[in-house]
Each structure stands twice: as C-alpha cells, then as structure tokens.
View 1 (spheres, helix red, strand yellow):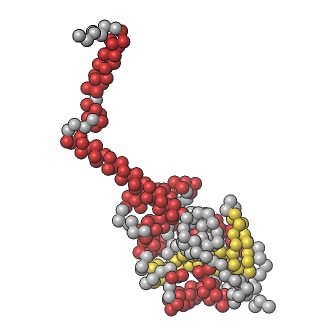
View 2 (view 1 turned 45 degrees about the vertical axis):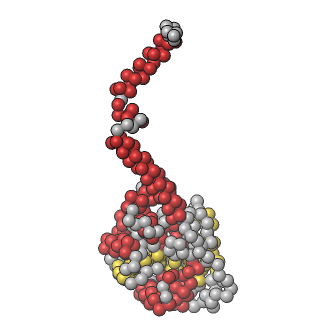
Length: 338
C-alpha cells in the first residue's frame, strides 16, 4: 500500500503541475508545435525547419560572395621600367586615409595634358601598357596606378567609393609637376575605374575630357554583375542579400547618391561612353547614364568589352578610338622633351 502524500511539498508540486497544464491548455498551438501529434503540425515544423536552413545557407553563400567581391583576385603588374620603351618614372602619392600608392608616369610633351588611366575590376595598371604606349606616342603624358585590392596594392575594394579619392590624390600629385599642364587632365576608366573617374570628374574642373567604358551608377550594380558571373544570377534573393552585405560593409557611404545625380556638373566636358554588347547589365547601366548626361557626349557600342581581354585587332581599333577622341577634345600641345 503506497503512502498518501499529504505533505506541503506534495501539495506545492501538484499546484505547479496544475498551473503548467493550465498554461499549456491556453497555448495549444505552441504545445502542438513543440510536441507535434497531428499531420499538419508535423508538416509545419518541417517547413519551418527547411526555411531556417535555407535562410542560413543563403546568408552563408551571400557572405562568401561579398568577401570574394571586395577581395578580388589580384593580377601582377610588375615590369622592368628600365626595359620599357616609354621610359616611365615612378611616382608615389598618398591617399588620405588610404596609404601610399605607386604609379607610372610616362612622359609626353612638356606642358602637355596628362591622361590618367583607371583600370577595371580584377585588373591592374600592367594590363594597360599597349594603351599607354599608344597615347604616349601621340605626345600625351600618361599616368597609371593600381587601385586598392588590385595589382601590387593590398586591402579591399569598395568598387568605386574610395577609388574616387585615389584618382583625386593622383591628379593632385601630378598637378604639382612642372612638366605637365596642371589644369588639363583626361580620364579613361573601365567599370570600377570608370565609376571612380566619373565620380572624380563631377567634382574636379581640371578634368577636361573623359572616356567611360562600362560605367555604372552605383557600386551595388557591379555586385550584381559579379554574382551573375558566378552563375547565380537566377537567384534574385541571393543577389539582393549580397548587395545588402556589400552596403553594410560600406555603410559609411550610405548617403552617397548615384553618379547620375551630379551629371550636370559635366556640362561642356566632352564625354565618350563605351558599351559592350557581351556585357548587357553594364551596357544598360552605361546607356542610362549616357542618356542623362549633358552635352557634349558620344556613344560607342562594341561587340566585345574589356580592353585587356581583346585580341590584337580589336585592341588596335579600340586604341585608335580612344586616342582619336582625346586628340579631338584634349590636344597634346606642349614642348618636345630634350
């Protein structure tokens, strides 16, 4: 015969169990989710579990993509300056808050304008040597350097935000030289470099001519392009997550407006916009900016983009178009070098 429980402890225990049962009775949904007994609650728990792991996997992939985009694969830009026919000088300049940069200055005529070349994403100054040579042959001073996270420079890329400050620092340093025209600069840029060049040109009256190849309005557009290049373009939510991750990392630039908002500052500055059919997203972004840009402006449509990956014939045609535009709108006037 079991002893009856008449102690205060048994009474308190029974009271606690009764309160718990009362609460569970008032929350049948939570109880059923925790201890599913019906087919539809079991299905709901399964769906919630799959949703949780899907979100977790998507967030992990987006984080990985964001990291890979801001830490691009670097290409070498090392050459022997002594053996290069253009006899370039090494020019160092400091980017406020960004450290030291090393550039190549290829001399043209004394007092002639300087064309600053801004390489593209996952590229470097060393891949622009044929374009540099063509411009220098027409007596321009030419300057090329590596952006942060590219070529010989470590760090991460902001896809244009901080790179615009690098272009400004380069122009400020070059303008101090006594062998160049300090008030006449031309800019050429491809995707990342085009964004940085346009951003600087909108604020710098020393930029007299600009060529923009595959330019975009906002760095998040290049994030989309890179996600699609990775073969994940069908997953729109993944593109959005990666863009949000990029914006979160660069939250200090959250108030920077799209470049198209300040295009009016370039009224009177000759502009050439280059679009590539094989890069439809960038071509569309470039055309939209072209249509909003004030005159004078020109548009060129190419079958294939990315100068550094062109074959020799396409490169020659491209170089001729670039040089012709600069010769027309930024004459290389100056004295011959001794």
